[in-house]
Length: 224
Image (cartoon, helix red, strand yellow):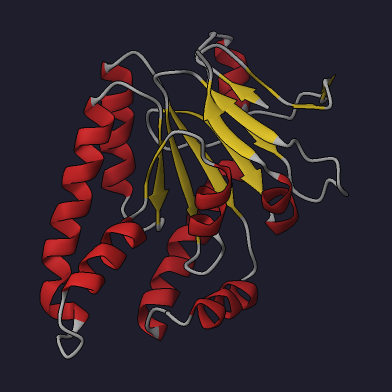
């Protein structure tokens, strides 16, 4: 599948997939930069093996904690990827074991956003991990992508809450019940909006995938 500033289409083994319905308002505008929504869920093994975006685009992967965002990024992203979990792991390795994470969490966040800003300002395509609750981050990334001549794209990993909780148990690290409920509400709101064709401000396209489609992906990269 290739996503650029003018259109979006998907291919599996060189075969073009049918166009998915986009937002009625977007179709009415008829502009080349109208947002596009692609739904790749429940495709029974016919999901694309690659997602390719424009060379100056920013891709945000979002979904519930434990849904497999970091795993997907590590396996499929070719190029720059920014994952807050990587930043936390680096700090965890340096900090004394007796020191609670809450103590140095502000430093981890500062380091993460510093690295994110540096990556975005480089002008190269970048894939960013997003927990789904920080809408202001997506707004900022959309502005930065537009400033450098690219667009922001969402890749939404739609995984049932039970499967996400199991994913947290498998990795041996989870979030509190309160935090998970907050993530769940935010993710559900975003998913419902995108399914209706209402993308966040400044977002050029959205791709909906389930766990099967995520497992089929071998590459998330950029053209050029």
